[in-house]
Image 1 (cartoon, rainbow, N blue to C red):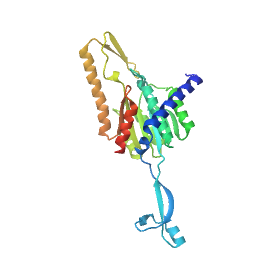
Image 2 (image 1 turned 30 degrees about the vertical axis):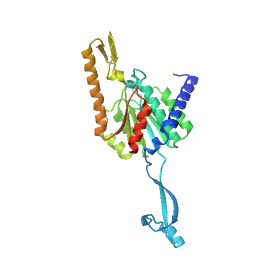
Image 3 (image 1 turned 180 degrees about the vertical axis):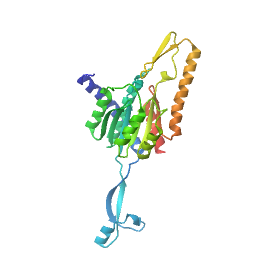
Image 4 (image 1 turned 60 degrees about the vertical axis):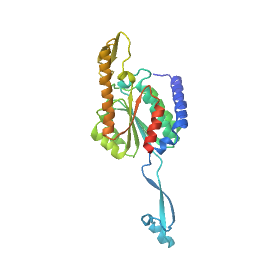
Length: 290
């Protein structure tokens, strides 16, 4: 558990870093990549030739004895929900852990929403919903989300996205942009995905680490431990054939994950812990605008 002073320092560091990144690279790109989820009334004005008669306001027209129409505008305020995977497998990492990258990306998305006056919420999960912060706005709300991202300690080590999406689909009725940030997606539940996609704009951020599919070349024995099952795997690092086989198998697993997302037409950002994730988000927003 971090002391209050350490926590505040860490929150401040992330606030400064993510604010700069949003201001420098993502302002405009984020918001122009997603559409509002509805229309809202703007004004009533006199009818002019060429206006759509279906927008006629008959009550106002009758009152003034001349035709008036209603004008609407797109509701631009967005609802952003971040589903952050805090299972034990995300604690893995070579240069930095997947967990730390998930925290940075979640903070980046939260500040992007804040800068565009959107509402944002956070759901932290493992094999169950561990923490839920409902949609909200404002600086204090964003800082609360960042504090939870930094300080929260999950009870479970396992992952079950089906349980999480089932719960999410029951509690979140407002149309939202949903970012699922996780290191697994091979077995996302089809039924729950369809429900989410029907109601919301669904984006998966798939987090990987280079050590998962490319072992370093050195002599000795490397022990990899499955943080969720506790199983240990021992590698003789001097055995090139073994390293090559491991690399091939793991790259096939990564390819299966990506193919799953493509097959189901799920918008996605695939990131490695060593990646320049800002550049990947810029490219993603560019693809969305096209």
